Amino acid sequence: MSNEAREIYKHEEITRSNTLISAKYKSTLTENKIMVLALKRAKRDEFGRPTITFTTSEIKKVMGRDDGSFYTQLKSVAKAMTGRTMFIEDKEQHSFKFINIIHTAEFENGKFTVNFTPEMNNYLDDLKSNFTTMNMGILVDFTSNYAYRIYELLKTQAYRVDKDNTPLQIDYNLSELKLAIGCVNTQEERVQKELDRPNPDFDYIVNSVAKEKHFDKWYDFRVNVLDVAKRQINEKSDLEIDYEPIRSGRGGKVVGITFFIKKNVNYNEIEAKTEKENEILLKNGNSVVDSAKRPDDYNERFEEIMDYIDVRVSSKDLKAFLKAADYDVERVKKAYDLSKKQKEIKNFVGWMKKAIEEGYSEDVIHVIDGSEENAKKADEILAEYEREKATGSLAERTWNRIKKKEEYQEFLQYIADQGMTEKTLESIYIPKERMELYQSWIAENK
DNA sequence: GCTTATAGCAGCGACTCCCT
DNA sequence: AGGGAGTCGCTGCTATAAGC
Image 1 (cartoon, rainbow, N blue to C red):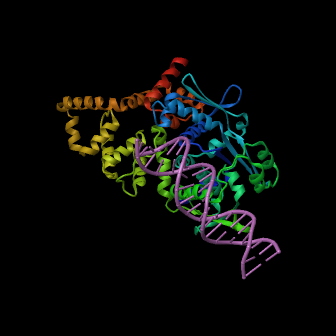
Image 2 (cartoon, protein in one colour):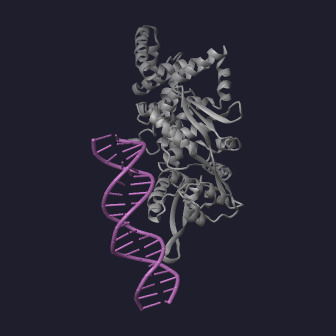
């Protein structure tokens, strides 16, 4: 896809999106990740209500820890999730409202079940399609939810930035902004009532109606919300923003904010990172892998290899190839070309790594393939087997065998019914868990 | 266990603008 | 012009949670 087409596509996506996700109060990164997964995979139960059930191991993986605090943490996550609201904006009426997303989130018998509110039926499909991988990557990168909320708000306007990338000016009433990003508790009955009116008086709501509000002091708001948002958005997203306060009245009270937004010229790198490494992020439940000693065009090199290698391997393995080759794309390609000439490779990943590290030439391979070297080869495979057994590649291979079976297509259909694609399955579950899933499906259906 | 980030509050001098 | 109300900018303190 050309860069230009990518730009157009992006804008299309943004302008369609009028539903945003926000937390009532502070929410953790873990909660965000689980929320994203829940939205992506929710399906309707027998009453037509959207619902999703996670296994313990899946949750643990997403949370990235397996210690004693797991249960306590999950409790707070569940609590925070039930406070999630969706932001619905009616631009013509110049009003907006928040609706609750989650009815209950509970942990019972080793399963974490999230029940969405019935209202969510109207928005779920919209959310699934609008909540793209890119947004997901950016979302989990923000450590401040206000930063993310401000990012979303400004991004809806980003399509108006012209080709010269001159900063686009957007004015916000301070109270309106505070309501929109969740600095003020919009769950309060009176607040909701006021917000539902056409052309609501935001200053009145914030100053006189709302009971719970955060960052009432301008300085605190500036330092802890605006400055943090500016820093994080400029560092992590495709936008570059700045702002200025609008003052009026006695004492020079700040009554509004003027934002200046433009495209972040450094974003290509960030984008590649978020898109390509998302699955690893979810797989490991960790933040993105270390970036030490990588060439500047690492992502281009990675993509080149990803395009080149047709065999299905995880991006983690692809990265390992690249690293083993000292980030030399040609060395990886050469090894891959060679692999295609082999009669049989039992462990593709292991073979590739070795081929890259030891620089197999066609001659060398010839000898190894020869009958007199069979014993040596068998030993190598055995050693490889023992080595890989510990790291899980054995399961990976077993999984690849399962995928060749006839009933695998039926299994795909089954998980599709659960709202999951093959890609999602493979990015969320480790091979061992995939097999467990597969086995329980066999047990139930065969 | 120490550090860092987020959140919130109190106090006080500095500043801005309104009003007389 | 200048007194004063209202607000800001900043320091410093505390609490909490997450990361190292």
